[in-house]
Structure formats: structure tokens, C-alpha cells
Length: 355
Image (cartoon, rainbow, N blue to C red; front, side, top):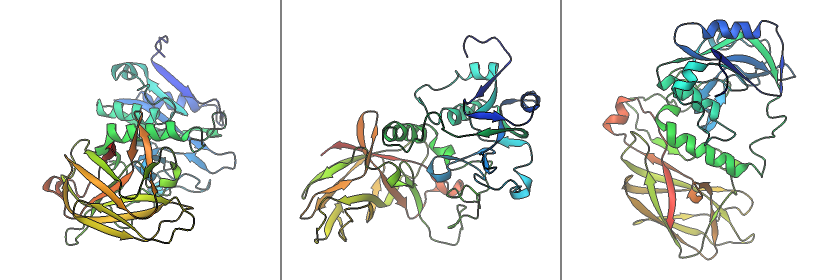
């Protein structure tokens, strides 16, 4: 891209097929509207279900294509599939970008070597004051990862997990507050169904603010770099809080795997003075262990202790070459800052500093 002297750059995957002759003209036309820096297209799977009609931040814990797998007759809420408009991000599989805007933000963050670089670019552009456009007038077939394979393949999991964590560290406050996605709509559902429980704050209800690293789907990454926790062992965890977040937590959930197939003894996990007696985790799949605690300051450290008769594996991912526990932390009563953002959630990490 640095060698190209043109007003616009079109990035196009090698696994796409053009459906309408005017696709590029339509994308350039929208890109010439005031302050639009990048434009995405309507992409179809070969079976005529939707592959992409725009990206929702935070969906499935990362970033997902809205209305993915919808039938060809689908129109979306208020016709959003069929209408040109602004979004937070579009896929780089077929993206037209202003060369001037691209250069202004420094182009791609090349630390995202394979995944999420297109989402990161869109977020950089919107942070610089530009808009991201989507036009259904440009239509292509996208075979999605046909040539490079899927990120969930064993040889790609570690690289992908690291990119996801980097994405959360860089954009945490924005990922769970996409201004182009209704707060009453789910971020666990690419079909944009109703969120339950509601993502918007209900003032008269007691509720938890929950945050999780790096995704709600632990089995997707495990085992990458699991941490073996022996009976009587401790892991010191330091919370690293990106941006404005809650300042204390009340509950920690981690995912544990039993190492002995015929273990019958329950395990005890403790943080500070609080101990949870957990049923024996399965040795076939991860089981969540939740510990209610008395307010941990997220700027400090805490120790996770395990007492039991057999070792367990605690789920972890690799972050910058070091193992990081993946936990969900929750706050029962949000801070004033959180209330002002209507219950906005954000990410925080728990890293293994010693054991």
C-alpha cells in the first residue's frame, strides 16, 4: 500500500467472487461522501446465506458479522441488511479505504498479523473522526478462510488468542459499547436477537457488571498454555485494567479441568479469606468455578489458592510470551462512572506473575 499513489485502495480477499459489475463503482461512490474513510460490501456464502453485512463490536466476545448465516430473503431490523449506512467496522475481505485517511492513522497495526487487523483499522479511523460505510449495492461471494484455514485450527489457536487479547487491551471500552448496535440487542447472537439479561442498565434492579478475558467461549482456546495447579499451590494474579473500568470486584470465575479421570474428592479454591468448595471438575471438559469475595481492588494483586488431593489445569492463554489466566470478574454494585455509562462493561486481564 505504501507504494501505491491513488486516492482509494481496495483490499480484496483471494477467496471472493464478484456478483455485480458495478460493485467497485458503488463502493467508491459511497467513499466519496463527506468524511467516510472506508466502505464494506454485502458478502454471501456460496449457499446464498449472508457472510457479511457489517461488523458488530463485541459480538461473541470479539467482533462478529451481523445477520451472519441469514437467508437471502432476510432484510434485518428496519431493513438494515438492504440499506447503506454507517457502522463501527467492516471486514477487510472486501474493503475500500481512502489512501489519505489510511496514511493519516498509520495504516494497519501489523501486530495483528492475521486476524482483527481490519477491525483495528476501522477503529483507528473512527477514533480519528472518520466514518465507516456499508453498501449492499456491492455484492460478492466470500468463501471465508478457504485458502488460509480457520483460526480455531490447533496450529493457529495460540496466535489467534494473543491477537484477541491484544484487541481487548487496545479497544476495551469501545468493544462493549458499539454505538451502531442497539443496547437491547444481544452480543452473543449474530442474528441480533433480544439481549437477555438486558445489556442496558435497569435502575431498580440489583445486578452485576461482568467482564471476561478474552472471550465467552473458553473451549475455543483451551488448552493453549494451561497452568498446572498442584494441591496446596498458589498463583499470584495481578489485575491490569485498561481504560475507565470498575475499581473493585466481588466475584471471580475461572475454568478448571481435572487431571485424574477417576478423581472423587472435591476441590477447595480460595482468594484471600474466601473459600469455595467446588465439585470435582470434569476431566473431559472445562468447568466454571465461581468464588464470591469481599471487594478486591483491581489495581492490586490477589492470590488464587488450590487445596485438593489431585492437580488441576486452570485455563490460560499466551499473552506476549507469558501465560495469562482467563477469568471472568464481576462487580455487584457499579461505580458512579459505570452508572453514567449505563452499565457499560469492559475487559481486564489476570496474569500469572508467580506461582
